[in-house]
Image (tube, rainbow, N blue to C red; front, side, top):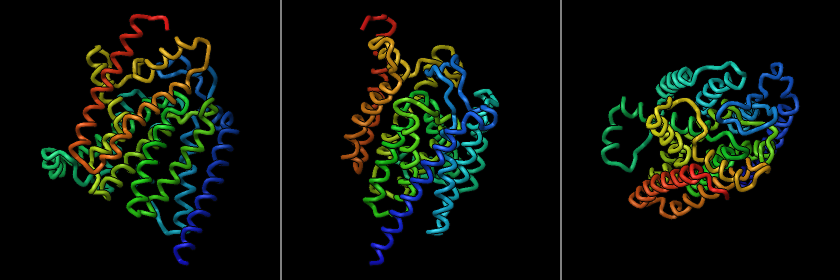
Length: 360
């Protein structure tokens, strides 16, 4: 009976949270033109990552953070739970990105420096750690505190910047994060981590509500603040699940984050090879190349959302096999490195196709 009462309370809690989150998004969207005198409207159509033609408010991150605070308050009242590390990291990184949403422009170099400094301070303060990886030499290195510390900061940087990098097409980031967090939710439910499962469910609810306003036609964008916020939360979700699931290969979690991680890593070295600044945006990322091809095939049509669907379907199909071998470290390693090869082959194939200007 007590178990049934707890389940009933949790369902009621999530139901109330879902309704309040939806109205948070609705209200922020409705008054987005008036918030700070319209500063949140994205009317810059010339930047490399712009693929929209209308003034769209970049307030998805603001609505997400408000919904997140609502969850934290309700969770504290009903269950006496407060997720300090998520509050600190999520809020701090949201604010760093939110300056850009408010058109208080910082150079990419300055933003990266602020992000690194913030992650160094908070990671040290919160004593975050990753319990074991499936590489013997890396495990030995991570026993040294300073190297463990640097490794965690780098993990956050890759995922946060990866989330921001792909946040340019309707539904691309939202669908990606829903897939990742849904798989993490399944693992935590399977391991009977009930409290954390509810927490993951709340994040998925926020993302689903965001998709209602962003996909297939966008009424609002996540913005840099929202991308940084959910990048930080997703990185923490993976670290928490990895630490509590020693039976699952750490390379399985690398596979889950593969697209976010490798998009940043590959782009960094690609730009250096092209004598470009590795931290400045361009229009040559994989999802942008695919979009150009789709535009050629369907001229005059809005292909923005179609690009997101194709990429996330391909991503899901490529990570699906790893789910069945998630406890086998060796096979997960092989599959992770195979994904790197597949990504590089697909990228250069798309790039070559566009250079030839084939009429498709």
